[in-house]
Image (tube, rainbow, N blue to C red; front, side, top):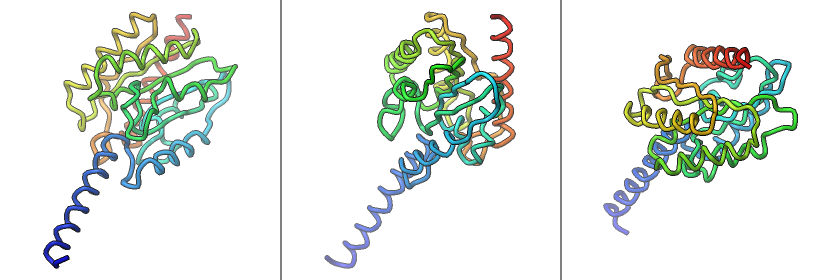
Length: 226
């Protein structure tokens, strides 16, 4: 192989590697070392159980994990109850939202529920922004079926600057319609203004607090209404 061909091959490898790494970061909130890192972050967050009282399960994406922050800085710590988190960066309602296989909420929740779980909070939608509406609908319906009537609150996506505003609004509107159709309480976050990390996708510590407090306030209102 000539020196020129060798240099060209190396350049091509670097370009492909960069594209893959950037795609995984944008999709999953992960580092370029991929799904193994995402899984380790998910495990670390699952090990952090906060509060006391009724069992509350949070299922979500990188926001619930606290991507870029410590696990104890993620928004679920703002909730009342004994809060457990099943978070996986890059996941969503759709089967193909994640770059790491089927990490959809309906699929994961089977292993996360406990007999005594009093409330399930499912947060997401940012990673469904480029998925077909039919896939979003299917994932939402599967989630509701998996819960078998348990109390559920769905929390929609916020207006993260890294996502096209129109796509976030479209996901929010679809989730709101599905929630009405199934009688599921829904909290829209499109009007909530968060502060973000440098990637313009993940909230910083202050943004996580604002997000968590908004969810906590809605839960209190929901429970007060019976």
